[in-house]
Structures are given as structure tokens and as C-alpha cells.
Length: 121
Image (cartoon, rainbow, N blue to C red; front, side):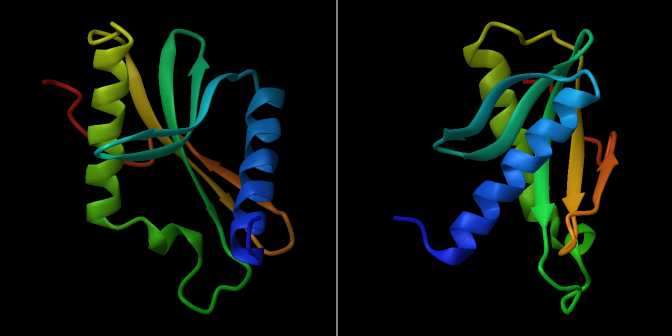
């Protein structure tokens, strides 16, 4: 059984996946977990693999969704993306990191290429 925070997170990820699909992204995987981290949504945007972090906030009390993506979180997402590409034999694939931000009134903002990371091994 999920607690209310987990339910809100799941609903936000569902909303983000539908939002991305309507914009032509093909959802490949969700809640991809490895020993090094987790990625909310893995999608394909034409020929580019897209690793998507979903950030939803009920309030802006702590600065809102954009401020919750720390350098440590970026490193974990990057390592997890590297893991995914290696395990699926896509080491040379074109990839990027997007962020979907969802506000407490379900307003959605997509930030393409939200941060850079080297995907070299």
C-alpha cells in the first residue's frame, strides 16, 4: 500500500508519461531501477534516448520543482542512464536528460536538455 506521498508521486509520473506521449515521445520504460539509482521515465524522442526526471511539488515552499534536482541527483541519473545504455547495448546512442515539472495545480512544464552529462564509459 502506498502512502499519500507515494501516491502523489505515482499520479504525477502517470500525468508526465501521458504528457510526453502526446508530444510524440515513445515511452520505453518507467521507474527503471539499478544498484546506482532510478530513472522515472525512459523514452525515445525520434532517434534520441531521453531520460526523464519527474518533479512534482504540492507547494513552492522549498523553491519548487526545479530546485530539487541537486548535483548528486544529476550524478545518480547519469550513472543510471549509463547503466541502462550499456545493459541494452545502446552505448553509442544519442541521449539527453529532460525534466518534467508539475505544479500543485497540475500545470506541466517540459525542460528539454535540462542538464548535461557525459555518457561515455
